[in-house]
Structure formats: C-alpha cells, structure tokens
Image (tube, rainbow, N blue to C red; front, side):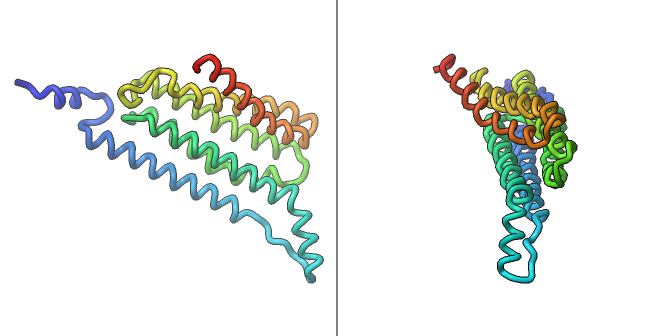
Amino acid sequence: MPDLNRTHVQESPHFTDEEDRRHVRDRLIFFSDAVIAIAMTLLALELPVPTGETDAEVWHSFVELLPEEYLNFVISFGVIAAFWMAHHQFFRKIHVVDTALLRYNLGWLFLVVVVPFATRVNSEGGFVLGPVLYAVVISAIALLMVLMARHATRAGLLRPGTPPHALRGLLVGAGTAASVFLLSIPVSFASPSWGRYFWLLTIVASRVTRRVFDRRDP
C-alpha cells in the first residue's frame, strides 16, 4: 500500500519533503531578521554627533540636529519596526515557501536596506528629492508586502486551516500606508515640509480602516 503522505510531498511544487519546507522557511525568516537588524543599525551609524567647543555650543548643536537628523532617525526606525512586525505576523501564517515568495522577499529586503539612504537624503535640507524619494521607498515596501500576502494566499502557501481573511489586516494596513505615502508625493512638490507632515495621516487612516473592517468582521 503506498505511503500517501510521501506521495503528496513528492508532488509538491515547492520542496521535496517536510524537512525542506521547514528548513527553507526558517532560513528565510532568520535571514530577513538579520537584514532588518542591519538596516536599523545603519540608521544609527548615519547620525551626526553634536559639535562645539563648549557645553553650550554642544547643546546648541544638538538642538539644531533634532528636527531633521534625529527626528528622521526616530521616524525611520519606527517605520522599519512596523514593517518588521508585519513581516513577522505574515510568516507566522506561512507553511511553505516557493521561488516567487523568495524573490518577493528579497526585493522587499532590498528596499528595507535602502531606507537608511533615503532617510539621509530626506535629512538634507528642504529639497523636494528628500521626501519624494522617501515616500517612493516606503510605498514600494508596503506594496511588496501586499504582493507577498496575495501571492501566499493564491499559491496555497498558508498554514492548513488558516481562514481566507487571515491576511486582510496586513493587506489593509500595508495598502493604506502605500496610498498615503504615494499621495504625499505631489504634496511634496508643492511643499517638502507639508509632504512630510502628510505622512502622519498614515496613523489616522490605519486606525479608521482597521475599525471599518473590524465592524465588518466582528
């Protein structure tokens, strides 16, 4: 009598056996966590040190760096942390990984690594390039999260028994973030400062959309 489990595994389009399934998925998660940690570290390495000949001058230099350099660091750290949490929740629901998901994830990690560079550009004065580049990078990260979630659902990569709407929160949150940052681009061309303030709408919009979907799915 044939081994049904063995036959099923051999016919899998993703990997040859259950050990490979767990091994590749776990390696992908560990690798992603390491890359994200490096990106967060690079943010801190780019921070300028206050300078001066006296305590008063050093404090003055520190205060001058607060609204641009240090605030941008806090924002970017929070953004990467939020995406890492979403990435963590997403892969908790993943049972197997295929080549397409690997490629999507590599593209996603590439953009995460670009965030420190985009943060640096955004800190350089009031030029339009700063907020526009930053918005493009963050929007692309959010959109890739949406693509990964949709692909995992359609390709049957989720854990057995996972309900179809399990990734709805991720899709809504990432989609909202991408929409707000994309809409901030034309605002930035009119005023770079207002373009940066526009990003704050992500917090409000995310809460509103979450409440709407919570009411639809009590």
